Image (cartoon, rainbow, N blue to C red; front, side, top):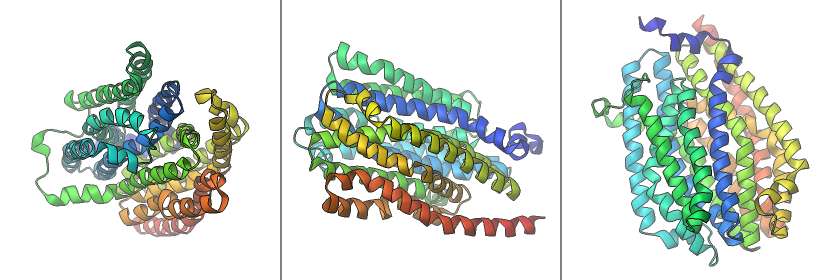
Length: 453
């Protein structure tokens, strides 16, 4: 009987803390390894010079665009899938999974074509200076070839997590990440391919991850099926996926735009400033991986239990995740503040200007770290329960509604310091903005809980 499916029983009955952590740990490992190989690119490329390091930061915004496509379709599909599975609507979950998978490949291919035909203007638009442009061009070309693979990989990863199979997702992502760390020095230094070698290593690693994730579906280890027969012929399915994924598109798209604007404003102060802010971004993403990983372990639990109308467990899951993430970010914020110069020297000890600029920016970011988990939790909560417009607005706050005006104003008032403090101030504003939304959500949840009794 479907009602006795052990995966469903686990998701709606297992102790909340243990359940979230069991799903979060594989996701955290996946994200940490992803962050490590992103930092490995930065580390090995930095050996080629400051301009090469700046190119990684410029192309990172291109990768954020590709991620925006992958996360839009992936998170949109995953949000629907977890709620469908919680309500025992397995066929509909498979229809969403297959439709999302093929749609991501199509969107990724469009990015490849558009990007390759406008490569130099694209790199310049993303903030490449004349000295950074040759490196950025060589790096971006291979990243664009890999766009369909990267988009599909994000979707497969999210489908597995939506099913509660975070361990399978971890195997695929972690294998690709480890391979990237091995291939980077091999292609850059042994094969003498320079920065293009780092991009090829990333592309091959992403392909490996995608094939491993896809094999989970082909070997029948998943609830959702990806066969062409499952592909939806109803436009409403695709619109529903995109609507539910809109917060992710907004979040990732604005992350790309904010990175471009940050690079442009940093470039006023030279390649050292661009490289420094790029390195700070990679360090922050490594720390942020803990919070994001736990949050992604929380999402399928929330979706299943919201779909099953177990609202008490929804509330318990939210507060357990929030407290855990805040504790982690407080500890990491203190550690990062104390060791900021040393962390910067790990990447580019030969350029004291990069170290000094980056250390100051990293310390400013560390001060705001304890406030970040609430924004993440609010965004994930509203996206997971299908409140797409609320989630989209909140997704737009951190790196859009607050960040973009601040990055246009603060550097004019405070120079380089304005560039360094823009993101932390944006995080403070985002935290304050989220408070009324989450208070309203819990009042509404209490009403639903009473009605369901």
